[in-house]
Amino acid sequence: MSAGSLFGALFIGHSFPIADSSFVRVDATHWVFDVGAVGPQSVLALKEVAVFLTQPLPDAASALGVYVSVGGVEWHFRGYVANSHPSEVMPLQWPEPEQCRRLAPGPGVFQLGVSVEPLAEVAVKEGSKLVGRQEYAKRVALDLYRFMESFNVGVAGDRLVLPTNVLEQWFVKFDQKFKRDPDFLLSNLGDG
View (cartoon, one colour):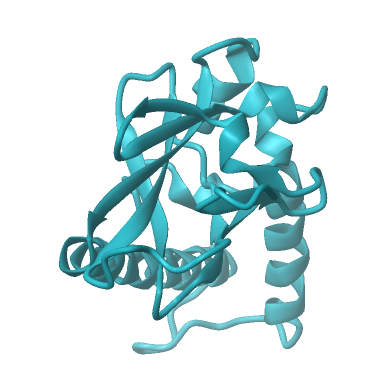
């Protein structure tokens, strides 16, 4: 990283540190990186990005918000770094994974964006991510419930009649679905 560098990023398991000078500086407060430049693998193989400050931000009340975009159409918040929180590993969670599978990597297709923003604003955005995590947990529970419900051949009052290894069977099935598509529970979840 150069002496004038403000931040860096790396794609966990897929890249060496990338200095902010490798990002395109859109204006004084925005940078964009074409993710296809990371390597030949599918962009969906890139699951997490680490973003870190290389020096303190000049304004302690500001932060760097981190976003992803597919096709440059809409930016989706993924996390932030600030003087009080100088590094973070963030899930990329590419929006619309099925659309991502159909798109060929190229300039402007899969992008990572960094933006200088007021710390108070990114803290509010970060809080809204927690709601998405709660929704994800509910979806895991609902998947388990529906799996258990499929075994119910007869009603015993208000109880389900289940095999003793139902959790093991569910986990095997869940694990297979997760290996095929780690984002299967996120469909129709929104930004989370």
